[in-house]
Length: 218
Image 1 (cartoon, helix red, strand yellow):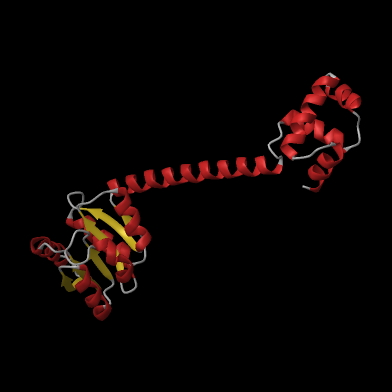
Image 2 (image 1 turned 90 degrees about the vertical axis):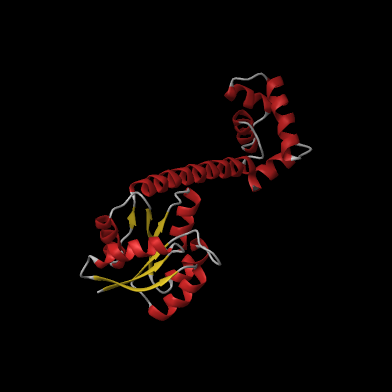
């Protein structure tokens, strides 16, 4: 028998949910609460298999108590709210499922209760769509952050030298003269000198030796 606790401040909603659940031989309502604080105390005493949790309630709302309830029961959120931040908060807080009123019938509610009781997850179609969009946005943000971090790391490693300045620095470190560098890179010696002037500024070096030491030691 799957023991269920109903947490909703609307008595009519609680009565309707009781009616839905009573049609199943393997589900029973173990208790009810009309606010988050009472729900936590009752869950700690009853240890129901599944808690049907609303969000908007007096004293303590669903989001503020979901993590405490998750210590005593598996949570299936039943609410009118489909905001992506709320869905994400509930799931991060320990909820195993999320259904929005008006999007499920008694049969789906019972399937969701059984799935959650068995340790599975359950999302309504809209909640699943919101969750997928949220995960995609998070992945895009993480990718952008990673790219910025990599770009910053690369700039630090190269002292901000351009690719051509790095080529000049590599040949300078190998002991080549300006003329030799110019020949290998197909540049004029004046251009090589200009590159070296920029390199000295970026490496905070006053001469070739200091530049080579800073570049190779880094």
